[in-house]
Each structure stands twice: as structure tokens, then as C-alpha cells.
Image (spheres, rainbow, N blue to C red):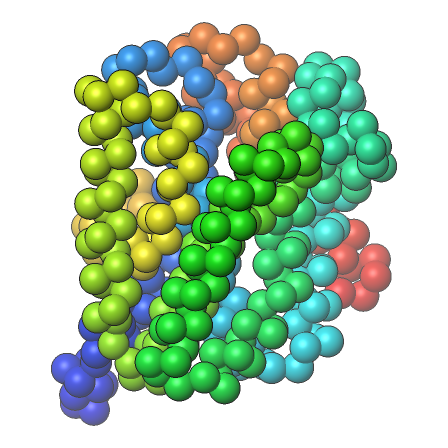
Length: 334
């Protein structure tokens, strides 16, 4: 016990951050999925500009947590084949079950919602017509290579490489959007480019925590990013700047996510027991809720009083998807 206290006293800031985020992982994902549902309901009006403007950041929290968790998963079992199999069995059966259940919704209730279906209609049946799934699948594919690169590069070379990669992604996104907007709008490319920094930083913070490193450089970048984003937001609200400029620059927020989640984790410790248990439960089923709620929301009228009803139906559907997916895994011996 005394040794545990000594270890905690000797933790670096990065290690304290990683430990806090790990302890509150399910709660953070529960908060994120709640924000996603609030954002997707879209009846809020001017009184909830915060949800309208910043609700999409909740998805980046998911990507950060995915990168963070994937790093630790790879550090425990580095076999690449086993890693890919685990990811496959976690996502694909859930997507297929969800796709079969909600196939009618995507093709009847909201035709053309996912233009990707016009090219590959079978993606809906496989549950892969949701951009988040296609994007996270890409990240999972490249994660082992990123993991090995992080172990081969030493600080500060790793930090320089990280910044260079993010700079390249930012320039690619801006230039491709200017020159090939139709292509970006029709594919997963736009989401894969914009959200990858959050996934990458999640892996980076887990790596630095494991090696006992510090986050001074990332902290400086986070302060600069927050200042730039605040300035752009002010310019949009009061100076007439196009909101598209601000949304394009949201990629600059990537250095902030570790610190934001650390703050969330510290706050979640003080949430009352029953409420905390409910949020953790939603975090446990966050993937299933993400897949189910869009279809449920599409079928129901967007009235304020309907939001709790839509959420309740989505949670029931998520549990159903989860249990059926477990049956599918069991059929194949997983």
C-alpha cells in the first residue's frame, strides 16, 4: 500500500492524465454519446448555440478514446493478427446486426442520407453506411504501424514527427477541400482527414505516459490552438467571418483533447452514484447507441417532448443490437 502511494507521488503529469482518463473511460464515452444525441436531435434553437457549434466535438472524443485504448491494447498484446481479429469481432457483427435492423430506415425514411450508398448499396446492409464506422476502421488498420513508429522514434523526434504529420493532414484537408470538394463530400475522406489527429493524439498521450515523458510541447500547442479557435469563434459571431472558416479550422483543436478529457475525468469523480452508473452504462453501449439512435431519430417528429422518448427507444434498440451481436459472435466461436 505504501509503495502504491509512493508510485502515485512520483507520477508525471502525463501519467496522472492517462490514469484519470483510464479510470473514467466509460463515463467519458457516456457523456460523449449523450452530446452526440443532443447534437443530432437539432431542435435546440438559439438558446443552445453551444450544442449546435460544439456537439460534433463529442465524436472527436470517441476517436481520442479509441486511439488511447488501442495503444494500451497493442502494448499488452502486440500480435497484429490477433489485434485485427479483436477489432473485427468487436465492430463488424454489431454493424451487420444494426444494418439489418435499420436497413429499411436508411432506404425508405431518409433516402439519400448517405450518398455513399448510391455507389455501394450493400454497405447499408452491412451496417457500414455510417461514416464513423468507415473512418474508425481506417484508423484501426493503421494503428499498429503508428504504434511501432512511436516506439522507434525518441523524443523530441517523435514530437516533431507528430507535428509534421498533423501539419500535412491540415494542409491536405484545406487544399483538397478547395480543389476537390465534390469528391470529399461524397466519400469518407473528409472525415478520415479531419478526425485522425484526435486519434493520433490519444495514442501519443498513452505512449508518453508509458515512457514517463512530459507534455510540455503539447500543452503549449493546446494553449495556442484554444486561443486561435476562440478568436475564430469571436470573428464569426461579431465580425462577419464565414462560419465555414471556423469549421475548417476545427482540426487545430487536436492538442486540447487530452487536457479536456482530463478535466472531464476529474469532474466525473464527483457525480452522484446513480447518475454516474447511468452514464457509465451508456458508455458501455456507446457504439450500439451511435448506430441505433440516428435511425430512431429519423423516424420520429423533432419535437422537444419527443427527445426523451427517442433516447429511451434508442437505448432499448442498442441493447438489442448488442445482444444479437453477441449471439453472432458465439455462432462463430468468438
